[in-house]
Image (cartoon, rainbow, N blue to C red; front, side, top):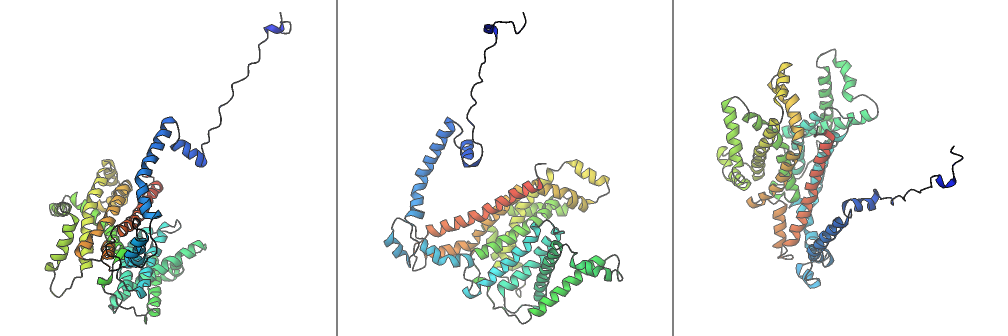
Length: 447
């Protein structure tokens, strides 16, 4: 019997497919909430429990800090009359300028802003892809920028040599941005226009000579333009607030890595004198708290210098903090060096590289990439530890916060300044942490 001759009852009946499940939203705010907070029954219960606990814990703080807070008042007594259970942010607002600049004169605070603006301008080329020789730009920033910043912040009559270095710093910064503008315009760098002329003098060093000639020409022009500019002298004891904290921590962060690299390499050295000196420095500094190092630098360091040399307290503190940070960084660097396989050293020797070429061209770049999280953690810790300088009398942001509580108009105002400083430090440290994660992704340190 053929297919067409079969009875209709023997034909297969149509069975519809079951309905598809509803579409689960996996994008947007709804998708994020479903994935991270409300993925199931127990996830929902845990989310509700955690948010309920946070509400119970944070509600008193939010009432004090926001809902019952006083934002405008002339004295703390007025704050208490308006809202006895709320925070008195009016005192922090009145003292905010001092928290940032310390006792730096109000009319001259533009110099602080200008100095930090130059520092930021020096860091911008390091983030631009078309810019070459970024290592040289960073080294020149470490070498020249302190002279420029000191000239702007301190002011007064400075030595001719100091003024020359400050003009050299401005000249190098101007040359860097001129070259960046020429690169983005599709043209050659400024030094390349002079290189053909200098090849007649020296074929080998024509590139270097052309760059030096451009740098010296710009520096001389800047020096001539700023010859008659006189900056009012601001003593170091007037510096303070976040401005002073950034200066101390900035020096510590910049110098910690080179000092740590030298101490770590010295500890691994085969020369006994260098090895034991490095070990003694690292272990001695790491075995005492930072406040002890600060007190020793202030009280004992002048004993090692002639009486004719007058060391200011800020220089002593910066030196002590740099050594302290370098000793801790040395162990971080040593751990990174030990993570490099021995085959990397053997491969470098097989191609004829010496010790320093092996370290700076092969070993250290790999080790530093792997150490980025630890290095940034040390930087964040050092930035917070610099607040200890308030104990030895420097008017950093912590000591300025304490001065709010002894002001006759804001006597007894303790909690609000500390909370404001905590929020400020959180944003700075969080920014450093996020930048380290960006570097990890950019450099692909997991490879």
